[in-house]
Image (cartoon, rainbow, N blue to C red; front, top):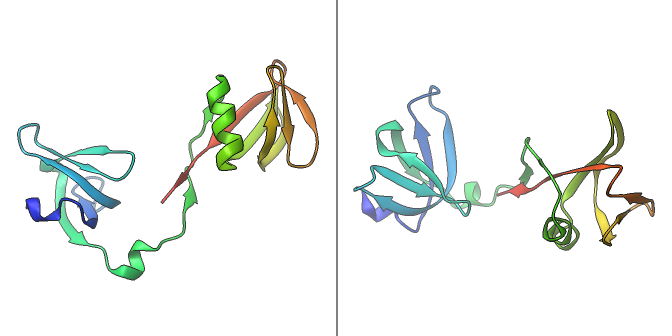
Length: 134
Protein backbone atom coordinates (compact mmCIF):
# COMPACT_ATOMS: atom_id res chain seq x y z
CA UNK A 1 0.00 0.00 0.00
CA UNK A 2 2.97 2.36 0.27
CA UNK A 3 2.81 2.92 -3.51
CA UNK A 4 0.05 5.50 -2.82
CA UNK A 5 2.45 7.85 -0.98
CA UNK A 6 2.90 11.11 -2.91
CA UNK A 7 -0.09 10.50 -5.19
CA UNK A 8 -3.46 12.27 -5.33
CA UNK A 9 -6.04 9.88 -3.93
CA UNK A 10 -9.55 9.63 -2.65
CA UNK A 11 -9.87 7.72 0.62
CA UNK A 12 -13.24 6.16 1.40
CA UNK A 13 -13.96 5.72 5.11
CA UNK A 14 -16.01 2.95 6.69
CA UNK A 15 -17.91 5.31 9.02
CA UNK A 16 -19.82 7.46 8.38
CA UNK A 17 -20.92 5.15 5.61
CA UNK A 18 -18.54 5.74 2.69
CA UNK A 19 -17.53 9.28 3.55
CA UNK A 20 -14.50 10.36 1.54
CA UNK A 21 -11.42 12.56 1.71
CA UNK A 22 -9.40 13.83 -1.23
CA UNK A 23 -5.78 14.91 -1.33
CA UNK A 24 -2.21 13.80 -1.72
CA UNK A 25 -1.34 10.87 0.52
CA UNK A 26 1.61 12.37 2.41
CA UNK A 27 2.62 9.51 4.70
CA UNK A 28 1.83 5.86 5.42
CA UNK A 29 2.71 5.26 9.07
CA UNK A 30 2.28 1.55 9.82
CA UNK A 31 3.75 1.92 13.32
CA UNK A 32 1.09 4.47 14.30
CA UNK A 33 -1.58 2.71 12.24
CA UNK A 34 -2.54 5.77 10.19
CA UNK A 35 -2.12 7.59 6.90
CA UNK A 36 -1.63 11.33 6.51
CA UNK A 37 -3.61 13.06 3.75
CA UNK A 38 -3.52 16.52 2.19
CA UNK A 39 -1.64 19.75 2.75
CA UNK A 40 -3.25 20.08 6.18
CA UNK A 41 -1.86 16.66 7.07
CA UNK A 42 -5.02 15.04 8.35
CA UNK A 43 -4.30 11.72 10.08
CA UNK A 44 -6.71 8.88 9.29
CA UNK A 45 -6.53 5.55 11.16
CA UNK A 46 -5.87 2.68 8.72
CA UNK A 47 -8.61 0.59 10.36
CA UNK A 48 -11.18 3.27 9.35
CA UNK A 49 -10.30 3.10 5.63
CA UNK A 50 -12.61 1.09 3.40
CA UNK A 51 -10.79 1.78 0.11
CA UNK A 52 -8.14 4.01 -1.49
CA UNK A 53 -8.49 5.03 -5.14
CA UNK A 54 -6.26 7.19 -7.37
CA UNK A 55 -7.80 10.49 -8.41
CA UNK A 56 -8.40 10.93 -12.13
CA UNK A 57 -6.85 14.08 -13.63
CA UNK A 58 -10.25 15.81 -13.91
CA UNK A 59 -10.99 15.03 -10.23
CA UNK A 60 -7.71 16.65 -9.15
CA UNK A 61 -8.70 20.00 -10.57
CA UNK A 62 -11.71 20.53 -8.34
CA UNK A 63 -12.29 24.22 -7.55
CA UNK A 64 -11.40 25.34 -4.04
CA UNK A 65 -14.32 25.76 -1.64
CA UNK A 66 -14.69 27.56 1.67
CA UNK A 67 -14.58 25.53 4.84
CA UNK A 68 -17.89 25.66 6.67
CA UNK A 69 -16.15 26.33 9.99
CA UNK A 70 -14.20 29.51 10.64
CA UNK A 71 -12.11 30.87 13.46
CA UNK A 72 -12.02 34.21 15.25
CA UNK A 73 -9.01 36.31 14.34
CA UNK A 74 -7.13 37.75 17.30
CA UNK A 75 -3.43 37.91 16.37
CA UNK A 76 -1.71 40.35 14.02
CA UNK A 77 -0.42 37.45 11.91
CA UNK A 78 -3.96 36.15 11.35
CA UNK A 79 -5.02 39.56 10.03
CA UNK A 80 -1.85 39.74 7.89
CA UNK A 81 -2.65 36.35 6.36
CA UNK A 82 -6.29 37.26 5.73
CA UNK A 83 -5.17 40.37 3.84
CA UNK A 84 -2.43 38.56 1.92
CA UNK A 85 -4.53 35.52 0.92
CA UNK A 86 -7.75 37.56 0.41
CA UNK A 87 -9.57 35.15 2.72
CA UNK A 88 -13.34 35.29 3.17
CA UNK A 89 -14.09 37.16 6.41
CA UNK A 90 -17.41 37.59 8.20
CA UNK A 91 -17.67 40.58 10.54
CA UNK A 92 -19.95 40.72 13.59
CA UNK A 93 -20.72 43.44 16.11
CA UNK A 94 -22.34 41.70 19.03
CA UNK A 95 -25.09 39.55 17.51
CA UNK A 96 -25.45 41.76 14.42
CA UNK A 97 -23.89 40.74 11.09
CA UNK A 98 -21.89 43.64 9.63
CA UNK A 99 -20.35 41.98 6.55
CA UNK A 100 -20.65 38.51 5.03
CA UNK A 101 -17.74 36.97 3.09
CA UNK A 102 -15.89 40.22 2.57
CA UNK A 103 -12.13 40.57 2.20
CA UNK A 104 -9.75 42.75 4.18
CA UNK A 105 -7.73 45.39 2.33
CA UNK A 106 -5.50 46.37 5.26
CA UNK A 107 -5.28 46.53 9.03
CA UNK A 108 -3.51 48.45 11.76
CA UNK A 109 -3.09 47.76 15.46
CA UNK A 110 -6.66 48.80 16.22
CA UNK A 111 -8.62 48.94 12.95
CA UNK A 112 -9.43 46.95 9.81
CA UNK A 113 -10.31 48.28 6.35
CA UNK A 114 -12.79 46.19 4.33
CA UNK A 115 -12.94 45.88 0.54
CA UNK A 116 -15.90 48.27 0.42
CA UNK A 117 -13.82 50.99 2.14
CA UNK A 118 -15.35 50.78 5.63
CA UNK A 119 -12.95 50.97 8.56
CA UNK A 120 -13.95 48.95 11.62
CA UNK A 121 -12.39 48.80 15.07
CA UNK A 122 -10.87 45.49 16.15
CA UNK A 123 -11.95 46.04 19.74
CA UNK A 124 -15.66 46.37 18.98
CA UNK A 125 -16.03 43.88 16.12
CA UNK A 126 -15.55 40.15 15.76
CA UNK A 127 -13.71 38.97 12.62
CA UNK A 128 -14.28 35.35 11.60
CA UNK A 129 -12.15 33.97 8.77
CA UNK A 130 -12.77 30.87 6.69
CA UNK A 131 -9.92 29.41 4.70
CA UNK A 132 -10.06 27.69 1.33
CA UNK A 133 -9.62 23.98 0.90
CA UNK A 134 -8.55 22.36 -2.30
